[in-house]
Length: 266
Image 1 (tube, rainbow, N blue to C red):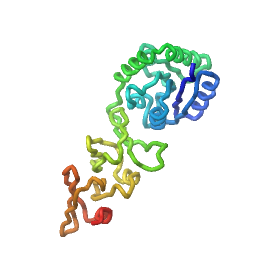
Image 2: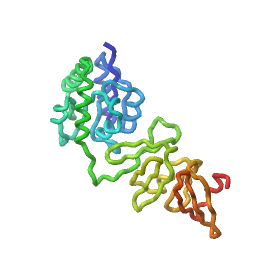
Image 3: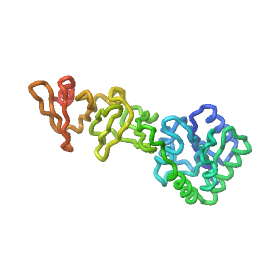
């Protein structure tokens, strides 16, 4: 049979190297990517479309469940979870036909899980496996006490063209072109996009440092606006100004932040 395209995801370098060494011993496996975090995994899965995924559960910023929960259903391959935390419902993985490796695991246990996955792939049981995985994800919910936040931008991008927002246990990749403005709200920032809003735990100052200066500018101590979203500016005698966006939203601009006039040629 053709080699099975496989991706391994773990935030620990030693664990990734161990998975690589074991997978290289199986001639049926082609390891196409080894990812060190959830964001890199999302990008690699979308780009490479693996047939098998070894996925660590407990990772910073984006955990294993959130990786799967953020993928389109048709893009989720058979999964072997790896975890050092037995408080997760490991029996549920078995019920839903998803194998798991409890760290530290033996070579024999690894190849048992791998052979089981290979058999499922060969027998075209991907649909049943996916249904079980989706059912498991439906039972997964992020703690309500965990704040939504921005996570770092994808590693494969040489320039910033999007922001990655973690909200309600799901990752949303927002093209910068869809963002209208950012509004500081106490300890959060509300991101206003064309379609909806996202509340994230991030300071406006830190966020401003991550945005391209030729596309976004601060117009008030609590507001950053996307220049392309601006329809017109209305200056006032005291130096303040009003901004009307293309979707007719009106914002207040402060005399201390008049850089936008230079950027739009005003």
